[in-house]
Image 1 (cartoon, helix red, strand yellow):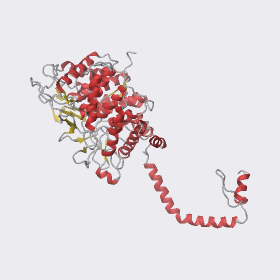
Image 2 (spheres, rainbow, N blue to C red):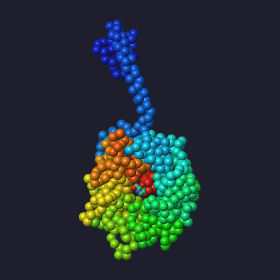
Image 3 (cartoon, protein in one colour):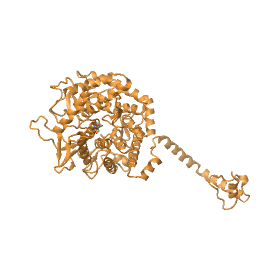
Image 4 (cartoon, protein in one colour):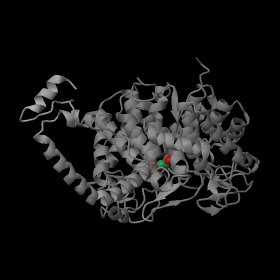
Length: 581
Ligand code: DMJ
């Protein structure tokens, strides 16, 4: 102790300087010594009286600390950003990151160890794939958002405990590929951690038998892992050989990526065979139909042209993947590009409409009608992946490129359609985009009866993010901020957790439901009863990721640029092949 400090404490009033200790007993003045002794007797009595409560509290605290292994990661840094510039993009990125951490932690707390989907009302996990579906679907989101604690937990689990096993449940081939294989692939692309490549290979090896199920090499809808058993379903019903176009025709990117990272060509070859057959059989006079006969798939009778003509459900990701697999191939796979460009032409020819300046892509109920009836003027939320795909095409030089002059060029149509999609979210006081909107004669949009609920799907924010990336126009970030604020207001419970399935008409939340792998949540007792499924939305995998990427600074976290990376349909990014450079 410095003499000056001791000196100061010996004189009254005694004030210890910062950093100084109290003088040891032998240095105290004689008057103080009895006083100190009395005080310490009293203190020890008081302490003795409180020792049991203190011990109990300490035990409870310890137990809590051990079970709260998922404490959120947001820290002083994040609140500093929010306080400094609450309306800046960085502040919004931080909010999205915080929300993601909070929702992921809630999932992990209940479902850790391989649970697939969180069931908030029951505080249990719904099992489906029996391999941590939500965790796998979220890996790259955790990486991109630098949620390292959460990532490390998933990594440890994947290294030690994840089993890709056969079970009695049949699982959707499509979901398995886009969520799990896509999740492993992009985790490997972003980190190089060997475990992700190993898991990706292990998973694919367990389902590769499905490619021998039909003469076209196109897989069935439902598969069992490692079981050599698969079933063909169509819209939930058993079917002889008709399958969904988007569900069966979305796997090329994932399996080609797997071949690239393992050096084993048979994964890509299997996917290419099926998709090649599909592309060859595409009808030339209409948008690709929703279903096709996988055995046999011939040009004459392969696609079922009798159904609805749409770019939404059962069609969407097939068209999307034509473009993205072409980009991934280093723009080498010209057949895919040609097929994509033709589909775009047909989409505008068959399904586009303009109402008082609002461009939409509706559905055609009778595609074989020679009179070419106008499409029904509605806009599906699912259809909003299309502007993003057009903008991406323009970035890669298609449809007039980024500086196209004609109003028919991709970039202009992408801009108009993104505006329509954004307006869907402005069409009601809740600020959420419904499943389907009707476009009125005056060009305004209203939620369509019977489909006026919101699942917080990703497609609108996906389009807004891609347009921002491609054009750099700051307006898109402002749109994103409005949309995020509205999700906080209408789609988030008071405890800060996101919800889906919001009823526009009643403005209420449903009560029960499971938390799909793409949605995460945490509930206090009261609000747990109010929460009813963040169902059918891909919040962690898609919605939150796109919001975050829209707001974040480019240098913040791993860089993902759309020239060199491509997102699968579940928003899992992988690197474009480097063969042209
Ligand atoms: C996404 O998970 C995928 O993009 C799929 O292809 C269709 N839509 C869902 C979410 O809305």
